[in-house]
Image 1 (cartoon, rainbow, N blue to C red):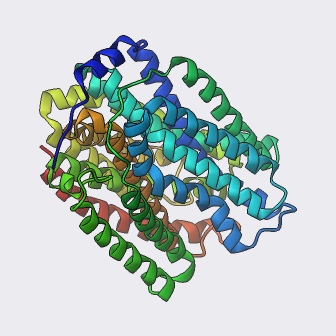
Image 2 (image 1 turned 45 degrees about the horizontal axis):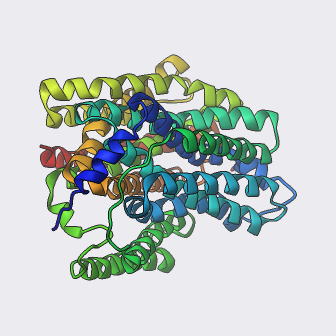
Image 3 (image 1 turned 30 degrees about the vertical axis):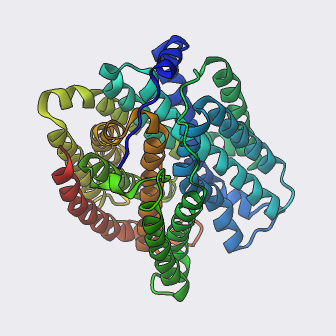
Length: 468
């Protein structure tokens, strides 16, 4: 595997143009959190859209939600590669522009196809912008500040997911469903304006874009996510779902064979021989699978068992963001004292303990005890993610920061899809709006969280073993 460093004069020129590192960290973290918040908030809009004049069917509703996620997941690595090759600031601005435009298009949509199109455009924009946010930090912040910068960035993603529920709940209590897209479209436009002024330009990687590799990798991720999405509806042994998984495996195999023959592949498969890359990719996916299994049921549990409104349910999980942020900010210091392996292990222990505790939550569980479960789990994620994400970035050359960030993001989105699919299958028909009782939902949560906890624990053993 060849590693290339940018020419010295390019590095010097980029360094001379840098704004304050703290400004860049804050801006990129805000961008990342906003992109993630849109993915989380959308679930709350489903009942309103289902009752709207658009009259979407069940399949259309699934794609209204998942169009953003599918485009987001499958284009993250190509988006990062584009940023490495054509300039990070330009790709960032293009992505934020598409995100804002897609949101505003969805807000004005008068029919289902136009709404789905708006979601797709926004997802493409998110896939272009998100890899730049981490890649830019790694190039602008001095190496000694990398752990703290990565911790802030990773915390912004989880906090963005939590605040997406808060903002989404409040907006949907006050406005029709179009208001949600209007708010996020406006936020994207504001971030575009600020980034155009404050985001620095960095050196480019002067190699051709791997168009065949981009197409193959995107197709493999689409097939995988499609199988995870449809598995809840069609059944995991249906021909469609098994065919999707088989297609993902076949396309991935072709991608590996093609990439090994190319001089400048999109994502060289040989990077997974590096222990930090392997540990980081799998660890990020597993951590977000556990986190999103919880996010999937939080609002449903609080609305059914405690009678909360959507807005109050969103606000009720806001304290979890504090636990996540404090743990992330402590992670770098603990890594310096104990080493990455012990901190990652401690983080996954917290995640597994939180998931296991969630299986004992019932209809009579007081809120004060309930909130400790996701707080413990997310604190564990906050400890583990900075060294895992930082390990991926540190193992790759500086001129491939965008590709490394894209890999990090793709692992996160696939893990999120796995967590939602797994918990959705465990709950079955026990969801809000399906006429179920709080007791039935609680019984389904018990078994679901125990299974998720065992799977996360088993995968965590491998991740810790691979962590240096």
